[in-house]
Image (cartoon, rainbow, N blue to C red):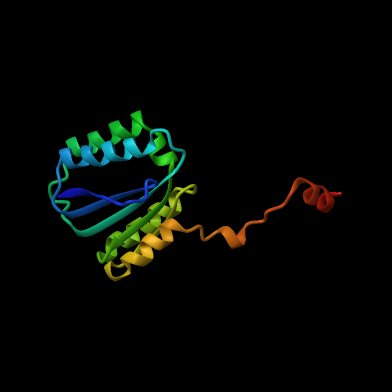
Amino acid sequence: MIEIIDIKDTNICGLRIDGKFDAQDVKGIFDALTEKVKGKNKFKLYYEISNLDLSNVSREMIEVEFKYLYKNPAIIANMEKVALVSDVEWLKKVAAVEFALIPMLEGKTFSFDQKEAAMNWLKTDQRAGKRMDLTVSKLVQTTC
């Protein structure tokens, strides 16, 4: 089953997967993500996966996913951060590889006992202290 989690932050889309899911569930996810992208530049994704049963993944489900991604490339392009909350270790490893392969996407995995930390991580900008905020005049001074 896949369900949408009602998160009060308009920039965060929340999803929960528990057990088996079908093409209709996948369509529901992409409908929700497409709605988040409308009129917004960036959004964040909060994902909870407690039990992932891939035994019923069908060609139809994969086709639904690819159709949505092909018709709505802004879904991936506008996904700023992803917090995956799960205790499924192999899934966390797969997610880490995905996060590394999509350079514009910042992602991190959390355990279920870290749900609050995951939400806080999504809502804050960890790069703020690492930025080089240079004004044009400072930049000209350093390059001349």
